[in-house]
Length: 181
Image 1 (cartoon, rainbow, N blue to C red):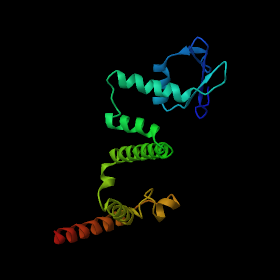
Image 2: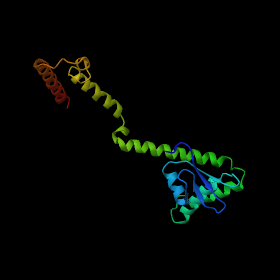
Image 3: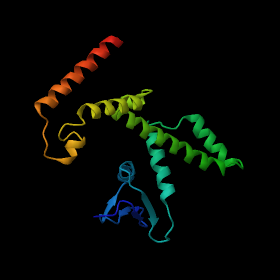
Image 4: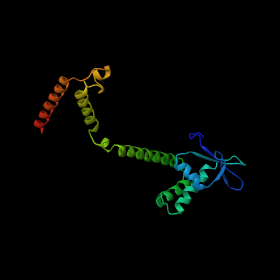
């Protein structure tokens, strides 16, 4: 099995065919794009010269997608990129783009975390959750297996008296709650 942390090495032959060194077969630009979408880093090397062609092929993949109607880059962004190559500002543009994409990626991952628990984004959710946990711990602290003293110690079981006491405490709490509302 290949190490997914190491970049997938693709060799370009003189015939311009691309060879996957892990699977020992030829690949297309679409295959390389899929490797990248799957989270794999890719490095494309010219077999004869040893030159790194990764940037050139990644740009080709983007150009192919853009030309087939999958427009991700607005015209004004493309225009500004072309302008940045003709000005002395080109040293700032790569860092800006990299930071922008990192912020986008971070925002997407935070959004996905909130989708898994939409209540977590609600103000005061953590405090409410802590109160609920404290209430449950107080209510079930003496029950076996509930994480309280007896539950940690093992074999002692709740007696009928204990259950009656818990029922009484629950009734008192319900009465207090009904007075509050």
